[in-house]
Length: 150
Image (cartoon, rainbow, N blue to C red; front, side, top):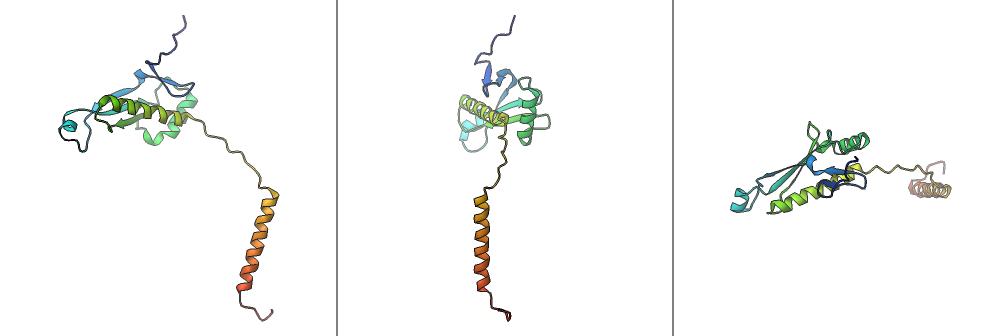
């Protein structure tokens, strides 16, 4: 019996080929800081999202290496990524916001770098550059005081 295809509610779509099961993500609601009066002091509306890039079974080894390289500065010592959202007074909106940020960040980290194609400088561009150098050198030479040889 083959495994059933992932349902949208169970998986976060990152790219066309990568999706992360929601069970790999850990959400935690904490009290937000800053102004807001009694509401911010009493309610845990800031949302933290934790995801372990090193142990995620959803990535191939190539993808994992790419993620660890590109997001290395954002990972803790155990290879976990932590994102937070506290812009809204609603825990639900902050959860949606941090989840969307996770999707965008991971998709960008998984995108392969474009290979730079080496090109040669056209001959006419080389000639124009050298001609410009000659003109500039001549102009500067004319500014100098004449020597006794001239």
